[in-house]
Length: 440
Image 1 (cartoon, rainbow, N blue to C red):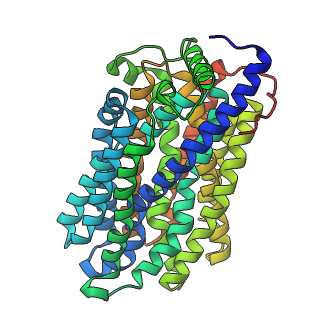
Image 2 (cartoon, one colour):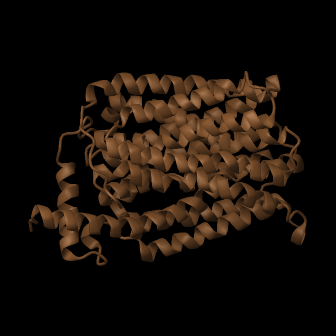
Image 3 (cartoon, rainbow, N blue to C red):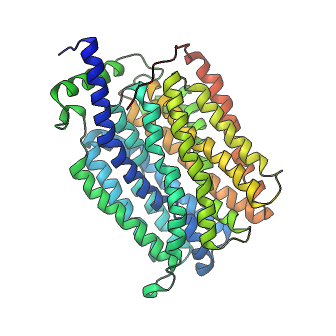
């Protein structure tokens, strides 16, 4: 069924508005609670480290082990999502992830901490690339940077709201015979389980199955998505081994590693860095939320600008350089809380503004047959590097006593990523006239 140009424009606006409002807010809520389960260990560490006698190296290793199992399970999980459907597989991920997160309250020492973090990584693996893959089924390429950016505001929002929330939960210390950090894990894990159950009834795997769209809307969306999938990609159909050797895949993994390592490392270590300025736990929670509030606004605006100009390359590289500049300047800044929070804000604005343009660029380079494994592989490698960086920061901090010095490997990694994306994507860059803004 073909539609005329005028009818097509009308159907496009109505379809994309309905798809956006149906899927994106719900996925954002799921990701928000999932992220709380992932990063709340940073706040739990303010009490847990003292209660259980964890050194910075022990805590850093435990926090990073999450990413080892995450790396191992990520690609198989995304291939399972492609086979069994997003509705069932995302529900499975969230239910198991929430249960394991709540059971973190049972940690009694280093080895149980290490074990639970490994289980949590395996349970969570596949959610983020699974949602990215799911969004490629529903959103044409011209919408993806802004949609991914809007969806991924859940990351800074989780820290913006989760920081004071986690700090308040720590104040429940002693209630019912439990420590504050135990309440933190329990009360932030249970909602994820409940949302996972809701996924089974709310999500729709493909546009062709969406009874909440009209027949004309389903037809238009299927034609658009299938038409784009048929176009030539920089990375065509490849086996997993061929994919691992592809230059675009390798570069994208390196590039993603810098931003992922910066965002993840700061989510784990930033509360403890801020605590060194003599703040109370509650004050730390509120101050820690400031950079994430700014990053939330910036990543939406940056993603929309990338879509409007149809430019991905420089939008990705500039964000990486902002991370490097913000973290690198911490070594030279006055060691006072205002300049440090300002520089952390710059780094986090870069880390989160990066995501919309980068993942839109990545999905445009992957063929339909490679996108599931490609997205998962890039994300898995990035998270493995990020996990290693968390541990490295702990080792450097313990050896030197300096948070500023421990952040310098992140500066090097993000600078290298910016150079890589500019060099390798140059041959793929196209001079495309700015597109008219599309309201969703």
